[in-house]
Length: 129
Image 1 (cartoon, rainbow, N blue to C red):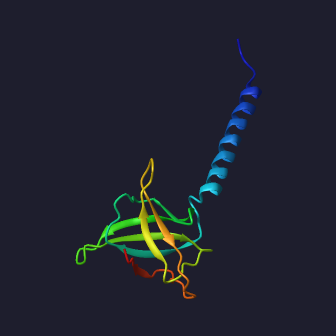
Image 2 (cartoon, one colour):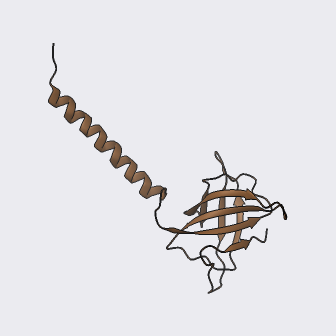
Image 3 (tube, rainbow, N blue to C red):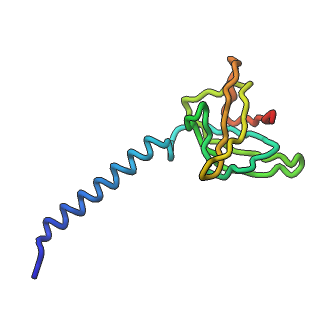
């Protein structure tokens, strides 16, 4: 007994269309895979619950992610390479701190300062905490 091949093709195309739509929706909602942005380097004394790929947030809104983590051998400071959205300018007097996650790894929280001067792409900033 042979089933209709056209129905199977249409059903498969529908499933693929729903999956692609879902992936596009999730990318837009989470900001994952953003193609435009700039790099910042932050040096901190401790980065306890952070991991590569962790969110960078301002006021709870994701504005970037942790691209890499390394230990500076001379100072024993953790150096984080951040990818920040290009439409976000971070004031030079901003504060950076690690917030623990509830069910997952933590995230890097930025409290924006009041300075008119912003951190330039590629700059390395030493966090006060």
